[in-house]
View 1 (cartoon, rainbow, N blue to C red):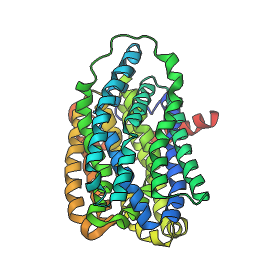
View 2 (cartoon, rainbow, N blue to C red; view 1 turned 30 degrees about the vertical axis):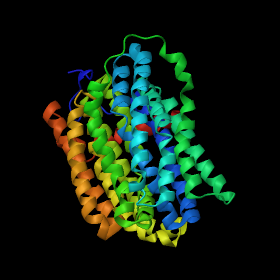
View 3 (tube, rainbow, N blue to C red; view 1 turned 120 degrees about the vertical axis):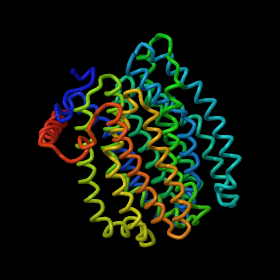
View 4 (tube, one colour; view 1 turned 180 degrees about the horizontal axis):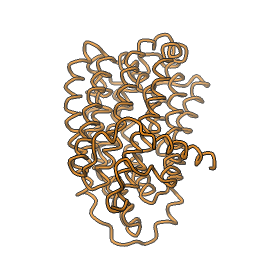
Amino acid sequence: MTPASGGPAHGGSPPSSPLVRAVMTTVVGNLAPAVAALAAAPILAQSLGVTGRGELAAATAPFLLAVTLATLGVPESATYAIARSRAVAARTTRRALAILAGAGAVAAVVVVLLAGVLAGGDPDLASLVMLGAAAIVPALAVGVLRATAAGLQAWGLVARERVTGAAVRLGAVAALAAAGALTPLTATVATAAAPVVAGLAYLPLRGRLGTGAVAPPLLGYGLRLWVGSLSGVLLARVDQVLMTPLAGAAALGLYVVAVNISEVPLVLSAAVRDVTFSADAAARDDARLTASARLSAAASAAVGLVVGVTMPAWVPVVFGAGFAASVPAAGLLVVAVVLGVPGSVAGAGLSARGHPGLRSASLAVAAAVNVVLVLLLVPAHGAIGAAAATLVGSLLSSNLNIWWLRRVAGVPMSAFYGVRRSDGRAAVRALRTVRRR
């Protein structure tokens, strides 16, 4: 069976050179926000303190949550449609922008109405929550443009946007701190505005879209995927949204630093997931899919091991002595990230092969368990309780994705785990590709 029709044997050919180049380009784009977040985290921690850092997270978490919830799966649906036929790019992009403009406006109104509850009754914090809501619609528009670029395999533009957003946010935070003007208010403005400014990186898309064919429906496929996005964002963000009412801003401040630390091993796996979705939608290849999962899991594990072993020494120095208590939570979150990598790639494969509902089912189960555990564990255990809930949810969603892919595509679950001799050769070829570039 050819790669286009279903893929070679599950232990067969490694990822191709074009895929490797796309992954490495996307790694650059994903690395920039992670590096910027790590660079900004100690500045924010030292300037705002544990409670102030928690207030910033409480103000921006609803904005970040709303941006994800209001997508309705439309960006992923647009990427899927454009990857399969570039002729529909122009009209698909316009239709996606129109849908999300309306959805974003509704989401912004909801956030404003719930601001008081989300702020735990603090009126000043509620004002910050409402301020962040103003950037929801622009941020959704940038997400559509990112989806279009991904469908066109324009990974350079995606990387440029992410680098720009990271640089703007880090530059703003550093400048405000140097001027003695970094507060939860100014940091909220920087966090909400940075991704919108970065959207200017997609201006070159205007010359690539043309007039185009009739756009396919976006909400059918998108809503099936959106259920998973909804569950996924609950898995990733609901703990931060609920922590202030459940445990206070100080506990959230510790947890946010733990999350920042745990995102380091996520850089490569996120890039592999994004590229795999687009590549597998264009041409299905089981061997490429499973090899990508194994390689990214091994790389994430190596990075996670280094971070986990060394962070007790450098976290108190970098973030301040008050944040030393975030180390245990960060350790649990690093484990959650690493163990979730194979299932993340499998989830991209499910969506690319027309089964986004199965990925959504995996995330829905994990999110339900996560919410229950957050409500049970966070009041008594704070950041550690939230991290434990995330670990359980990550394990559930990851392995359910792999199980579903075995059911619908016959890909053995074992093909996503471990390291093969061919993986080592593929890694060497990937490094050679990077050196040539």
